[in-house]
Length: 238
Image (cartoon, rainbow, N blue to C red):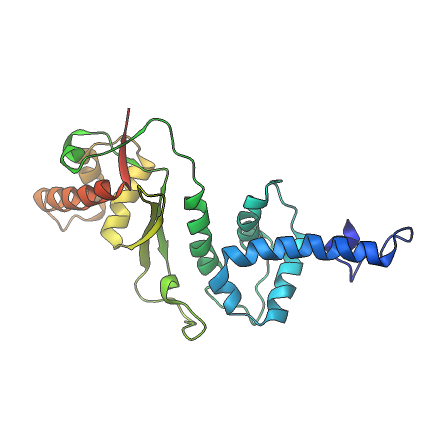
């Protein structure tokens, strides 16, 4: 196994012929490469093929995956970048944020619904306990990850963070929604205080935005959360 993971630094077992061992070397590595590459197409496009293969080999040889499922390999790669990988001079500064943004699409696409979740009608936002859907992720990044491409690679974070909600709609399609700081704050409060009602949420927001009146906060929160309820981002519970 050590040879299969890192053949340059671990000799082939003497009792296995090269032809057979080569099959296993290619099979294992190509499987891992395929799962990672399909999950991170934008990140991959920023590297030469040789540099990408080197990165995947580093992941394959150094990281001990905690899950036996092929579907979890992309998440294991993100864990590797976060905890075990030392960025190289040719890695973009936004490497981890872009990888996380791309991984979230897969994460949301396979997320399991919490049994007690119920779709929330917009007109019931004022009278229902509020929850962030198990199909939704409230995100913020210091780089504009949604615009990154081969021809657009920022070297410094933007002055303002980029906010997104990634969610699975009623047709099981993953959607990306650009939001703002206030929407992110509302959803963060709901996520951290599951079951809070609209008044509770507004009181929590007031601590962060004292420049707004209670009426302004209430109307703004009502409009935003009603729209999020329509999209299935905010739900209620049985």
